[in-house]
Image 1 (cartoon, one colour):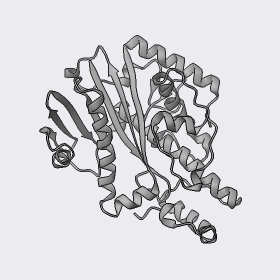
Image 2 (tube, rainbow, N blue to C red):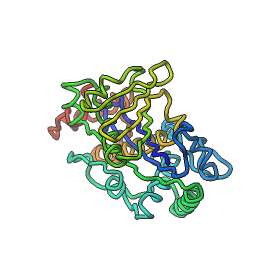
Image 3 (tube, rainbow, N blue to C red):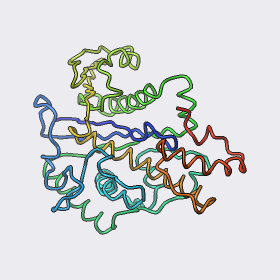
Length: 321
Protein backbone atom coordinates (compact mmCIF):
# COMPACT_ATOMS: atom_id res chain seq x y z
CA UNK A 1 0.00 0.00 0.00
CA UNK A 2 1.15 3.53 -0.78
CA UNK A 3 0.06 6.78 0.88
CA UNK A 4 0.93 9.32 -1.80
CA UNK A 5 0.61 13.03 -0.97
CA UNK A 6 1.25 16.34 -2.68
CA UNK A 7 1.55 19.93 -1.45
CA UNK A 8 1.62 23.13 -3.53
CA UNK A 9 0.80 26.82 -3.26
CA UNK A 10 -1.05 29.52 -5.16
CA UNK A 11 -0.71 33.24 -4.65
CA UNK A 12 2.93 33.45 -3.62
CA UNK A 13 3.67 36.73 -5.40
CA UNK A 14 0.55 38.96 -5.58
CA UNK A 15 -0.19 42.27 -3.87
CA UNK A 16 -3.79 41.35 -3.03
CA UNK A 17 -5.50 38.26 -1.72
CA UNK A 18 -4.40 35.26 0.32
CA UNK A 19 -1.45 32.94 0.06
CA UNK A 20 -3.04 29.51 -0.29
CA UNK A 21 -1.26 26.19 0.24
CA UNK A 22 -3.15 23.07 -0.77
CA UNK A 23 -2.59 19.40 -0.02
CA UNK A 24 -4.00 16.16 -1.38
CA UNK A 25 -3.54 12.57 -0.24
CA UNK A 26 -4.26 9.38 -2.15
CA UNK A 27 -4.15 5.82 -0.85
CA UNK A 28 -3.20 3.20 -3.45
CA UNK A 29 -4.06 -0.12 -1.83
CA UNK A 30 -2.35 -2.36 -4.38
CA UNK A 31 0.76 -0.31 -5.12
CA UNK A 32 4.23 -1.22 -3.84
CA UNK A 33 6.14 1.92 -2.70
CA UNK A 34 9.40 0.23 -3.68
CA UNK A 35 8.37 0.70 -7.32
CA UNK A 36 8.82 4.45 -6.99
CA UNK A 37 6.26 7.18 -7.61
CA UNK A 38 3.23 5.97 -9.57
CA UNK A 39 1.99 7.66 -12.73
CA UNK A 40 -1.54 8.37 -11.60
CA UNK A 41 -2.41 10.00 -14.91
CA UNK A 42 -1.85 6.56 -16.40
CA UNK A 43 -3.52 4.58 -13.61
CA UNK A 44 -6.62 6.79 -13.88
CA UNK A 45 -6.26 7.38 -17.60
CA UNK A 46 -9.92 6.65 -18.33
CA UNK A 47 -10.96 9.80 -16.49
CA UNK A 48 -7.94 12.13 -15.99
CA UNK A 49 -5.41 13.73 -18.32
CA UNK A 50 -3.12 16.77 -18.34
CA UNK A 51 -4.60 18.74 -21.23
CA UNK A 52 -7.39 21.30 -20.90
CA UNK A 53 -8.79 20.10 -24.21
CA UNK A 54 -9.51 16.38 -24.45
CA UNK A 55 -11.81 14.67 -26.96
CA UNK A 56 -12.85 12.14 -24.31
CA UNK A 57 -13.92 14.89 -21.89
CA UNK A 58 -11.53 13.64 -19.23
CA UNK A 59 -10.69 15.76 -16.19
CA UNK A 60 -7.58 17.90 -16.61
CA UNK A 61 -5.34 17.58 -13.54
CA UNK A 62 -2.24 19.71 -13.92
CA UNK A 63 -0.36 22.76 -12.71
CA UNK A 64 -3.16 25.22 -11.95
CA UNK A 65 -1.49 27.95 -14.04
CA UNK A 66 -2.02 25.77 -17.11
CA UNK A 67 -5.74 25.33 -16.42
CA UNK A 68 -6.77 28.97 -15.97
CA UNK A 69 -5.83 31.49 -18.64
CA UNK A 70 -8.36 34.31 -18.27
CA UNK A 71 -9.56 36.62 -15.53
CA UNK A 72 -13.31 35.96 -15.35
CA UNK A 73 -15.18 33.41 -13.22
CA UNK A 74 -15.96 31.41 -16.36
CA UNK A 75 -12.22 30.89 -16.81
CA UNK A 76 -12.33 28.67 -13.71
CA UNK A 77 -13.86 25.91 -15.85
CA UNK A 78 -10.72 23.77 -16.01
CA UNK A 79 -10.02 24.06 -12.29
CA UNK A 80 -13.61 23.61 -11.20
CA UNK A 81 -14.18 20.34 -13.09
CA UNK A 82 -11.29 18.55 -11.42
CA UNK A 83 -11.61 20.07 -7.96
CA UNK A 84 -15.33 19.34 -7.68
CA UNK A 85 -14.99 15.77 -8.93
CA UNK A 86 -12.36 14.84 -6.35
CA UNK A 87 -14.14 16.68 -3.52
CA UNK A 88 -17.31 14.84 -4.47
CA UNK A 89 -15.49 11.52 -4.28
CA UNK A 90 -13.97 12.39 -0.90
CA UNK A 91 -17.15 13.71 0.71
CA UNK A 92 -19.69 11.30 -0.82
CA UNK A 93 -21.54 13.84 -2.93
CA UNK A 94 -22.00 16.34 -0.12
CA UNK A 95 -23.65 19.42 -1.70
CA UNK A 96 -21.47 22.42 -2.51
CA UNK A 97 -24.02 25.15 -3.13
CA UNK A 98 -21.77 28.15 -2.54
CA UNK A 99 -18.21 29.11 -1.67
CA UNK A 100 -19.00 28.95 2.05
CA UNK A 101 -19.66 25.21 1.64
CA UNK A 102 -16.44 24.84 -0.33
CA UNK A 103 -14.29 26.68 2.21
CA UNK A 104 -15.71 24.50 4.98
CA UNK A 105 -14.91 21.28 3.10
CA UNK A 106 -11.28 22.24 2.46
CA UNK A 107 -10.76 23.87 5.86
CA UNK A 108 -10.06 27.37 4.56
CA UNK A 109 -10.83 30.20 6.99
CA UNK A 110 -12.50 33.33 5.61
CA UNK A 111 -11.17 36.63 7.09
CA UNK A 112 -13.44 39.11 8.85
CA UNK A 113 -12.66 42.04 6.54
CA UNK A 114 -15.75 43.47 4.79
CA UNK A 115 -14.37 42.73 1.30
CA UNK A 116 -14.74 39.03 2.08
CA UNK A 117 -18.42 39.29 3.06
CA UNK A 118 -21.15 37.62 1.03
CA UNK A 119 -21.16 34.30 -0.74
CA UNK A 120 -20.78 33.13 -4.33
CA UNK A 121 -23.08 30.47 -5.74
CA UNK A 122 -21.26 27.41 -7.02
CA UNK A 123 -20.40 26.11 -9.49
CA UNK A 124 -19.41 29.30 -11.31
CA UNK A 125 -18.27 27.82 -14.63
CA UNK A 126 -19.36 24.19 -15.05
CA UNK A 127 -22.86 22.84 -15.62
CA UNK A 128 -24.12 20.88 -12.60
CA UNK A 129 -25.18 17.96 -14.78
CA UNK A 130 -21.65 17.68 -16.14
CA UNK A 131 -20.27 17.77 -12.60
CA UNK A 132 -22.46 14.81 -11.65
CA UNK A 133 -21.33 12.86 -14.72
CA UNK A 134 -17.68 13.65 -13.99
CA UNK A 135 -18.06 12.50 -10.39
CA UNK A 136 -19.67 9.23 -11.43
CA UNK A 137 -16.90 8.51 -13.93
CA UNK A 138 -14.18 9.37 -11.42
CA UNK A 139 -15.68 7.24 -8.66
CA UNK A 140 -15.86 4.29 -11.06
CA UNK A 141 -12.21 4.72 -12.06
CA UNK A 142 -11.06 5.02 -8.45
CA UNK A 143 -13.01 1.92 -7.47
CA UNK A 144 -11.66 -0.09 -10.41
CA UNK A 145 -8.06 0.76 -9.50
CA UNK A 146 -8.51 0.45 -5.72
CA UNK A 147 -7.38 4.04 -5.24
CA UNK A 148 -8.91 6.39 -2.67
CA UNK A 149 -8.81 10.16 -2.59
CA UNK A 150 -8.37 10.40 1.17
CA UNK A 151 -7.74 14.07 2.05
CA UNK A 152 -8.02 17.47 0.36
CA UNK A 153 -7.32 20.69 2.20
CA UNK A 154 -6.13 24.27 1.78
CA UNK A 155 -4.66 26.63 4.35
CA UNK A 156 -5.13 30.30 3.50
CA UNK A 157 -3.04 33.12 4.92
CA UNK A 158 -4.93 36.40 4.59
CA UNK A 159 -3.14 39.71 4.10
CA UNK A 160 -3.33 40.74 7.77
CA UNK A 161 -1.64 37.51 8.90
CA UNK A 162 0.72 37.56 5.92
CA UNK A 163 2.00 41.02 6.83
CA UNK A 164 2.34 40.11 10.51
CA UNK A 165 4.33 36.97 9.80
CA UNK A 166 6.55 38.41 7.05
CA UNK A 167 7.50 41.27 9.37
CA UNK A 168 9.55 38.75 11.38
CA UNK A 169 10.37 36.15 8.70
CA UNK A 170 10.75 35.89 4.95
CA UNK A 171 7.94 35.09 2.55
CA UNK A 172 9.75 31.86 1.69
CA UNK A 173 9.87 30.88 5.36
CA UNK A 174 6.14 31.51 5.67
CA UNK A 175 5.37 29.37 2.64
CA UNK A 176 7.60 26.58 3.99
CA UNK A 177 5.98 26.68 7.42
CA UNK A 178 2.49 26.27 5.97
CA UNK A 179 3.65 23.33 3.86
CA UNK A 180 5.14 21.76 6.97
CA UNK A 181 1.81 22.20 8.77
CA UNK A 182 0.31 19.94 6.11
CA UNK A 183 3.20 17.49 6.45
CA UNK A 184 2.63 17.32 10.19
CA UNK A 185 -1.07 16.61 9.70
CA UNK A 186 -0.30 13.86 7.19
CA UNK A 187 2.17 12.30 9.65
CA UNK A 188 -0.54 12.22 12.31
CA UNK A 189 -3.20 10.84 9.95
CA UNK A 190 -1.00 7.98 8.73
CA UNK A 191 1.35 7.12 11.62
CA UNK A 192 2.11 3.56 10.49
CA UNK A 193 1.74 3.79 6.70
CA UNK A 194 4.99 5.66 5.85
CA UNK A 195 3.52 8.42 3.65
CA UNK A 196 5.47 9.64 0.62
CA UNK A 197 5.01 13.40 0.33
CA UNK A 198 5.89 15.35 -2.81
CA UNK A 199 6.42 19.13 -2.67
CA UNK A 200 7.44 21.59 -5.36
CA UNK A 201 10.92 22.94 -4.75
CA UNK A 202 10.88 26.18 -2.77
CA UNK A 203 12.92 28.96 -4.34
CA UNK A 204 15.29 26.64 -6.16
CA UNK A 205 16.86 25.44 -2.92
CA UNK A 206 18.48 22.01 -2.79
CA UNK A 207 19.06 21.56 0.96
CA UNK A 208 16.21 21.30 3.46
CA UNK A 209 17.53 19.04 6.21
CA UNK A 210 18.24 21.78 8.75
CA UNK A 211 14.81 23.36 8.27
CA UNK A 212 13.14 19.97 8.64
CA UNK A 213 15.09 19.37 11.84
CA UNK A 214 13.87 22.69 13.23
CA UNK A 215 10.29 21.57 12.56
CA UNK A 216 10.82 18.16 14.19
CA UNK A 217 13.79 18.40 16.60
CA UNK A 218 13.18 14.91 17.94
CA UNK A 219 13.16 13.23 14.51
CA UNK A 220 15.98 11.29 12.96
CA UNK A 221 16.44 12.68 9.45
CA UNK A 222 18.29 10.83 6.72
CA UNK A 223 19.35 12.55 3.50
CA UNK A 224 18.40 10.23 0.63
CA UNK A 225 19.21 12.63 -2.20
CA UNK A 226 20.27 16.25 -2.70
CA UNK A 227 21.02 17.10 -6.31
CA UNK A 228 19.95 19.46 -9.08
CA UNK A 229 16.74 17.52 -9.70
CA UNK A 230 15.40 16.73 -6.24
CA UNK A 231 15.97 16.72 -2.50
CA UNK A 232 14.65 13.69 -0.61
CA UNK A 233 14.62 12.94 3.12
CA UNK A 234 13.39 10.18 5.38
CA UNK A 235 12.12 11.22 8.80
CA UNK A 236 11.69 8.81 11.69
CA UNK A 237 9.82 9.63 14.88
CA UNK A 238 9.62 6.57 17.10
CA UNK A 239 8.14 3.85 14.90
CA UNK A 240 6.71 6.32 12.36
CA UNK A 241 8.36 7.15 9.04
CA UNK A 242 7.71 9.64 6.27
CA UNK A 243 9.62 10.39 3.09
CA UNK A 244 9.54 13.98 1.81
CA UNK A 245 10.68 14.91 -1.68
CA UNK A 246 11.21 18.48 -2.88
CA UNK A 247 11.32 18.39 -6.67
CA UNK A 248 11.25 21.03 -9.40
CA UNK A 249 8.02 21.04 -11.43
CA UNK A 250 6.45 18.50 -9.10
CA UNK A 251 3.00 19.49 -10.30
CA UNK A 252 3.89 18.18 -13.77
CA UNK A 253 5.24 14.86 -12.42
CA UNK A 254 3.04 13.93 -9.47
CA UNK A 255 -0.74 14.10 -9.68
CA UNK A 256 -1.26 14.74 -5.94
CA UNK A 257 0.86 17.90 -6.28
CA UNK A 258 -1.09 19.00 -9.35
CA UNK A 259 -4.39 18.52 -7.51
CA UNK A 260 -3.02 20.39 -4.48
CA UNK A 261 -2.08 23.24 -6.82
CA UNK A 262 -5.61 23.27 -8.23
CA UNK A 263 -7.24 23.25 -4.78
CA UNK A 264 -5.02 26.16 -3.70
CA UNK A 265 -5.69 28.16 -6.87
CA UNK A 266 -9.44 27.58 -6.81
CA UNK A 267 -9.61 28.60 -3.14
CA UNK A 268 -7.70 31.79 -3.86
CA UNK A 269 -9.81 32.62 -6.91
CA UNK A 270 -13.06 32.29 -4.94
CA UNK A 271 -11.74 34.71 -2.34
CA UNK A 272 -10.65 37.14 -5.06
CA UNK A 273 -14.18 37.00 -6.50
CA UNK A 274 -15.45 38.24 -3.14
CA UNK A 275 -12.81 40.98 -2.94
CA UNK A 276 -13.50 42.23 -6.46
CA UNK A 277 -17.26 42.16 -5.89
CA UNK A 278 -16.95 44.37 -2.80
CA UNK A 279 -14.90 47.06 -4.51
CA UNK A 280 -16.88 46.96 -7.75
CA UNK A 281 -20.10 47.44 -5.78
CA UNK A 282 -18.51 50.64 -4.46
CA UNK A 283 -16.91 51.61 -7.79
CA UNK A 284 -19.01 50.16 -10.66
CA UNK A 285 -16.51 51.15 -13.38
CA UNK A 286 -13.61 49.41 -11.62
CA UNK A 287 -12.10 46.50 -13.53
CA UNK A 288 -11.45 43.37 -11.44
CA UNK A 289 -7.94 42.27 -10.58
CA UNK A 290 -6.25 38.92 -10.09
CA UNK A 291 -4.09 40.69 -7.50
CA UNK A 292 -0.68 40.31 -9.16
CA UNK A 293 1.73 43.21 -9.00
CA UNK A 294 1.40 44.96 -12.36
CA UNK A 295 -2.39 45.01 -12.44
CA UNK A 296 -2.54 45.23 -8.66
CA UNK A 297 -0.88 48.64 -8.82
CA UNK A 298 -3.54 49.81 -11.25
CA UNK A 299 -6.26 48.45 -8.97
CA UNK A 300 -4.76 50.06 -5.87
CA UNK A 301 -4.47 53.44 -7.57
CA UNK A 302 -8.14 53.33 -8.54
CA UNK A 303 -9.39 52.34 -5.08
CA UNK A 304 -7.11 54.68 -3.09
CA UNK A 305 -9.77 57.44 -2.77
CA UNK A 306 -12.27 54.87 -1.49
CA UNK A 307 -9.79 53.54 1.07
CA UNK A 308 -9.23 57.07 2.34
CA UNK A 309 -12.97 57.80 2.44
CA UNK A 310 -13.75 54.64 4.41
CA UNK A 311 -10.65 54.81 6.58
CA UNK A 312 -9.51 51.35 5.48
CA UNK A 313 -6.10 50.35 6.76
CA UNK A 314 -4.00 49.35 3.75
CA UNK A 315 -2.12 46.79 5.83
CA UNK A 316 -5.31 44.72 5.94
CA UNK A 317 -5.64 44.75 2.17
CA UNK A 318 -2.22 45.13 0.53
CA UNK A 319 0.76 42.88 1.16
CA UNK A 320 3.90 44.49 2.47
CA UNK A 321 6.21 42.29 0.39
